[in-house]
Length: 376
Ligand SMILES: [Zn+2]
Picture (tube, helix red, strand yellow):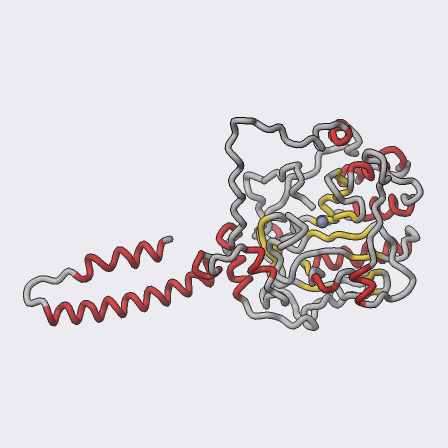
């Protein structure tokens, strides 16, 4: 690290004095102490901005972000990539709306960018009004300051991902305990390979998924391959957005909505667009072969794999350090004030104006996430 190196380099040269030694040594050692304390101050200030090891106490990033119960008092924006970043100025979706209820409140993962919260509210309203879906049960979004989580998700780090149950909202407001204990229902047959259970599946679920895919802000949606196949086999409506619905491991109890980097969010790293077409092709057929499910082939001569190193704060974009260090906003002030998505989004505190769209330039190398099974 730069500052350590500079500090160390100062010591040996600085102490060397010639001639009448004592006084000079005293003065120099005093000034060295001053320099050293100055350097220490700079070092501390540096950690606030740079996200270097001194600030994180050696703890993995998931512990640091998992310990944050409130969002940062900074402008709302995603920082970094879906699976490697954090959330500045997170806002919470209210636990209840006219057409949604948030589940597992103890997890405190109702946080996202204003764009994500607004989109979910709009989907819940449109699905209720146009598709006969009574309301959404909301699973995990992001932590208050995003970042890696101690359990459950590789992505969901920047406030642009939301899990939504494939179970419809019940007709009453659930208690906190019900929200903790109600089980989501898998859409798959228990004793068959990768097959949707037609007793559980319904055209209303297909409509909900296609509705979600229809919004231009939605980047992609993850579902189980069996659900994607069901849509490919049965959807007779417009297939323009079917390609946004992507097969992935899991996702048989819920679907995962991912929105694009908002315009002007210069620190947000976009994902490569979904390929053209409806996705009911070879890429789907692959999931119905043995390959994705076979255990990895073992090389008898291979060394045992090294334990993967946990993601540290210094592995994330530098701005995540400032997000982590920033003062908190109360939950009340940071809760999104919409009305089910029927009016443009408003915030209790106003976000900083977004930079002009022209300032948004995608990086030249766009990362392609691995197919296995990092994105959930
Ligand atoms: Zn998810």
